[in-house]
Image (cartoon, rainbow, N blue to C red):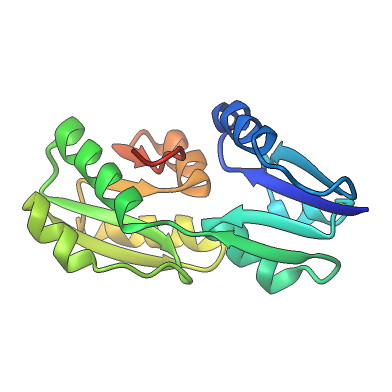
Length: 174
């Protein structure tokens, strides 16, 4: 039996992920499970019974770097994902400058997206949970942004500091 575990970035995304999985015709010797992790993903993963783990963003980066008892597959953050979240941030907060927190392994043409939405975007590359807090403090101290965009780790941190934030959303493309 091959066990595949999908790490959902948000609890709200679990039903749509399960719906997508239910539409896949996979062999009888393959099983899928979907979970959402609150807290430290690497520590949580130590007890996962999986051959393959599918994750996104910083979760993928941390698992790929630290875990050895399963294979890790990345779900990419696409240019479309970035454009949608920047659009939502601009429409919601009207910032002059956005701090865009992305895992180190995510690449996109930030200048192009910045030009489309007429807003400065400061890319913040992160490789750990701790870096989120450190980089936010640096941006705040330097007054370098009016809003933040990021994934689940950034969302958990920013909710505690009451700062304008837009989080990535997951879903099917149009």
